[in-house]
Length: 631
Image 1 (cartoon, one colour):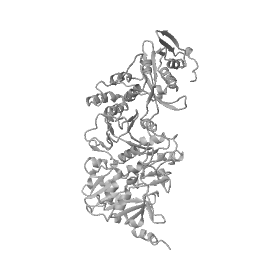
Image 2 (image 1 turned 180 degrees about the vertical axis):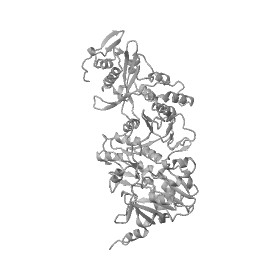
Image 3 (image 1 turned 90 degrees about the vertical axis):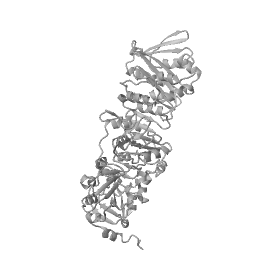
Image 4 (image 1 turned 45 degrees about the vertical axis):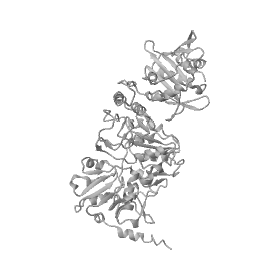
């Protein structure tokens, strides 16, 4: 027997077909109307509603839409009032001028407003795909909060667009649950993406350094997320759990980078709630079982997100203050966008095993005239991600890890990734607020750029690896810990005397590195936020001779693994690039390990022994070069 519940859906469908004008005629005075999201904005229905002159006091609610929002124009002041759950460019002016409202709320919690009746939806204007053989229409490019609105609304009016892709997942509505239907055949609204610029690429590089094989990513829309995708080509088995994605993801799927094979939730599936991009993207999701669409109460639920191990969330910000407060929805007192899913995914990734929540932003705005790392947020600015929630903050100058750090450590880390020309100002402001030591190292007005090219991995004798990078002014905590894990013998070899303590005042001297006259390289156990410092190399240039005095120190429990030799090679290569003529060093005669390191530097060593100390001189000229010895 036929399924009697569905055997007459075709007739129901035909009976519900009407014109756009008749479809929106059901909306009365003082009612609340929901409009579908993003590219799934029902343009024909919105046009018909906007042209009605016989209604007043109609509230229109939605998140970001891509179409024209005529209902926010001043001439419709008494007829329509918009309430934005996320402010898009098409309604930003109306909100700023007080002709529209803004409701700050997590994207994951909007559906509950509708389902509980706290926000009653009298009519939901949505756009769907044509029904399948069973009478089900797909929400297509936007399931997000549309599903909750449609299932909660007293009246559902659907624009059935022949060009809407049939997305799969928890994203269907049956013909019987739609009250009026308007067939159309018009292009789905697109959000074309431009090529990432150099600034976005520099930020993306730092973000990509935090990604590892098998990670699950949340990526939004915009220049930085698109740029990040471009740096993921060499990764393996990445997964996607996100509120949205755009065109850039397609190539990673085609290259076999995004396989979702190691996801711990929805293995083998890309999970999203909506997409915005080009027609190519919409064709990609059409009837594609790889992509699973779910409403935002699921995709953005922090407890669901956290079930993905190695979850990495990437979100943007307008400004970040020196304590770690993130403003992402306002320019001072002007509401600019919305909370969206930033906090949902930040908290979800933070609770994920191996997860990393990332806030990414350029260090400046307005052609480098305004710093986006600031002493305090602008008056009226809202805090979207709190100090307690923030983990990584990334600019084009690097990544700062803030979670669990005190205010001094946070301020120092953020100043380090601010634009160099604003760092002295930020340091001065931090001192005024007592966020840093009163005698904290002053930063020069012309700060040399951090030499990122020196960052990299070295292979040790036992085939394990360690991470090498230049010393940063923010490294005071790990340098301090490094010192207290040295044996008295190692301290004596390095400083020629016993030093029992390394307080802040002494550490300041070690951290005064300008990467020109003064250079220091450290070795870390790995490249994570919890890495231990295991080695240190330093040189100081003597301008009169153009030689530098070099010194090395390796933690006792890591000695004998080739770390000193690797440090020497790195320091020699950098010194030569800077035009340094050679090294000098003073080494105690009994420090055989360090003497071996200097003699394996690739150049002949001139030495003189006086009162138990070898005074070494190593010119870098070509005639003094010799083949570098194997370890």
